[in-house]
Image (tube, rainbow, N blue to C red; front, side, top):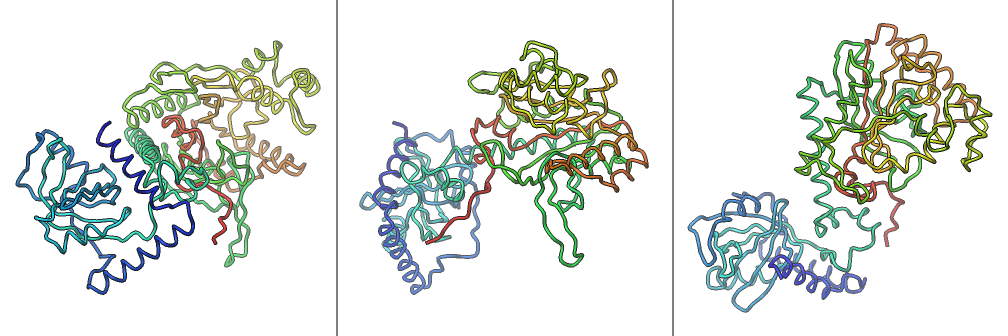
Length: 515
């Protein structure tokens, strides 16, 4: 058994002994720790000091002194800080394992070195306390890198016992609700958010290298546009007006292309007042980019580069596991039209030029539910969703969406019933969406009018007519390629997470009832 595994099992035993599952045990433990704080204050010790000067992170120490042979002691004095994760009392010696963001390290506390008073102070520290330690770097006879402590400062007294990573924090809702506790004991949770950070940083680096400018656009919108989704509604008291939390970044970013910025991107939160599932959270993070003088094929190329680079930067490899299938993201990604996939799935031609009745009959024959208000394009989308999506494991660009379901995309230059749009599917789920952007203000007004008509007929996800955006288009939007990538879903792919809640630090949950 490795030292790390021994430490984990010792931690499990100590935490289990604290009986954190018992409310009575918890209250007794908290009361004991509150008393300890009172005792510290009576002796002039502040249990919550203002600052601490450390010389190294624990990861830096491990890297710097990795070559140190077992049983050696250096003359280098260090100051380190971390949370106490393990404490073992062996008479005149105490072994304390502390953890910071980068690593764990052992504190070697000898009564003969620190003296009786300091030894008693250290012995009375609890699991979960934050401490700062000063001392010399050494290795034990077994080769464990340690700090031979000369003094320890309490940096923050923990009133609550740590959750037991083996027994006490297994409830998934508790993990999401108390993410702070989850991060303390769950190495995998910390890894996921390191992957998330690396992914977003990689996007910024890749786009900056291609001369994209990062911008920030409003979160509060007068019109809820840029996507098919129900918005959250709020009210501005001073202006006495209704506003919507944005459901997409798109329309403001394209206004900037009109203004001549040529290449822009934004990474930001969007909000959709819809269901919650393993793939959906009401607030989530999107990256949208827009490039003048480009079309949807250029954007597909960019999408591949962005995601490949993110995999390399976050994982160190382009190989990822997708539902049990190893996939190399460096390989070319398939590009196929939606109508071709749908036609193949049902064994007959499917095209938006066909009548609604004909397409509805095809759907019914294959057990696919349709609604009376749906047009041909929406029915085709449903056929594709029901029969084709589940086959798309490896990265696949699904292209040529019907005009009806793509109000902001340009008409396909070879088929007026389709658009120059794509969605990227990986592991059966949509990960990205992009267009050759519609830049004809007259046609865009007609599309908006169709959306408004659909909304009036009861489609709560349909958009309205955004007059300011139409005015911007009348100044002239150059040929433009646009892209939107769901950051949360991409992080799920790269980290192997099974739920979107695993990749959002504080996902939306029902209110907690406090006792």
